[in-house]
Image (tube, rainbow, N blue to C red; front, side):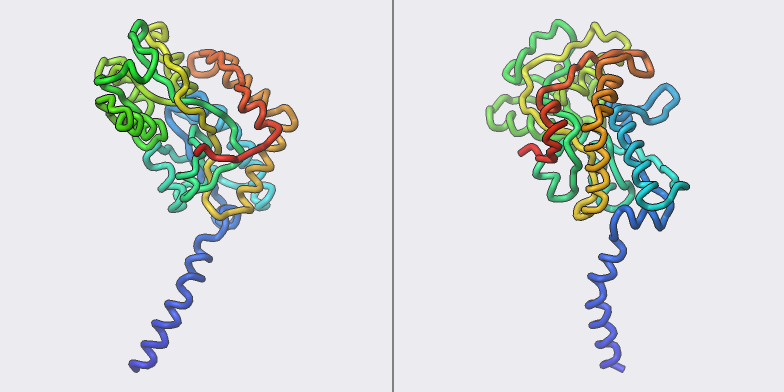
Length: 297
């Protein structure tokens, strides 16, 4: 009996890695078997992924995700594919992707080397830099002007880490607070609980434009660090990454990507008809040809 038990345990140990691999599978296999793909969205990452006036996800990244889903239907032969949605935050988006709760995230996630140890990124589809949202008239032009002041950034973002590191390196004495999402961070500035909100400039422009009184807010400072945004995928899933990259390449080469860009960054967008008036950066123009997924350092 003891020998039989030992043989069983040895067999189970040998099969464990194979079972884990089979359970992991590829995203396309998972989606085909379940008949459902779960797409993650952000609630306040204007104009990439946010809620409209009917509390439904919308935005530039969200619309591109829709194009990807159509290609997933073709690749899996599941025209009846159900699209489930899942709200994510800066703090939980990576864990929820890694544990299989979500299958893809089209939002405002920075593609960097640290995150690439846990997840994969598709072709970069935007470039941005860290700046500050303040009340209009506030005397803040650079990070140095925030010495000894209270600054907020959203927990789990690269921006929070950048400001924390610079604060320590330059001994600025900034009281750095963390908020659960971008909307809460902006509210902390509006309610004077923080002097400035450090975040990607394009998101700050979106929050400013969608606020009750945009003239009361200002986006200031030179970009501290330019970084790429990219669609986030599970690591070690080359088939799904190829499908997503191919979809983006088709959009970028056909001119459709530029049309989508003008729709979300240079035209009135829901729910308030705001226009971000944010022309395409040279970095993004270059990547429409290069099709690079190179991360920020």
